[in-house]
Amino acid sequence: MRKLLSLLLFMQSWMFAQSRFDGTWEMKMDTLQFSGPTEDYLFADGMYHCKSCIPKVDVKTDGVDYEVTGYSYDTLAVRILDNHAIKFTMKKAGRPYFECIETVSPDGQKMTEDFTNTMEAETVTRKAGFTRVSNGPPGSHALSGQWRMDTVRNDTQAGTLTIIKSTPGGMKISDGSESYEAPPDGKDHPRNGDSHSTVSLRIIDDYTLEETDKTDGKVTGVSRSTIARDGKSMSVEVSSTKRGQTMTYTAEKQP
Image (tube, rainbow, N blue to C red; front, side, top):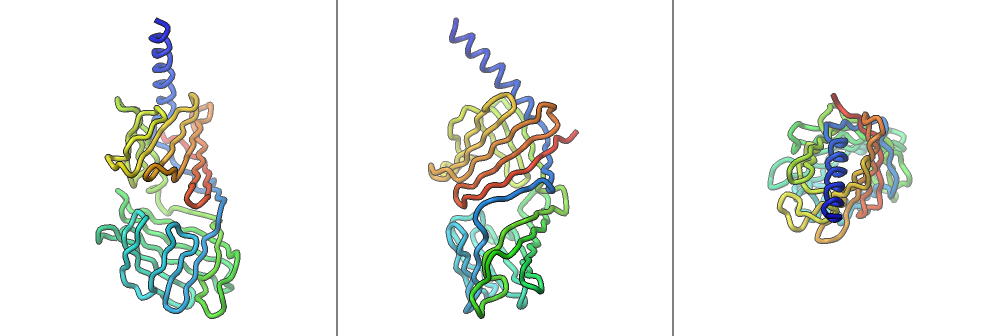
């Protein structure tokens, strides 16, 4: 009887906590903050070297699609547009995945990234701003060196929404690029049937949900979402263990 009572209390708390998270949450782009390692590029002798990428990337800057591994896309093409701008095109299974143009300011101290993701249900366009941390070696392209991301802005609502819904199987989470479902039991579950990629959800308390992502059993990221007591907003912290980067933002619940 005692075990049954404990189980019933747990289930009641679980469903109550789930109901708090249910809904559509919009990321407020002006609340984004970043910390962690800088981006580190080198463009020289007809090659692009991404020193900060994990895994590292080394491809020619001739605009040809080259195979890359360890990423959500499988080919990368890099083309130098001029002395201050470079275009990156990523594809998956031959289909355009996303592309971006990175442009260095005339004084060489700022960089903007115009980003388009065509793999979402709705095309996402975004602009990011970076500040130079260090220069590249003499003779290299202006984009070479280390850069710190300062700002990100979406031109549309696409890519800023997260939908959480309680289901018989636990919780379903959709962010526009993917959707997955798992019970909040703290155990690893294959992400959409992929045994190499797993997700675990854990309800810390009635207001806090933690997600841990793994690839081949190794933790790649942890996110923690905390609902405000009035239920109108949610504080989110996302940490990437691959890069040692952390992103925080506030999301508001949509009507």
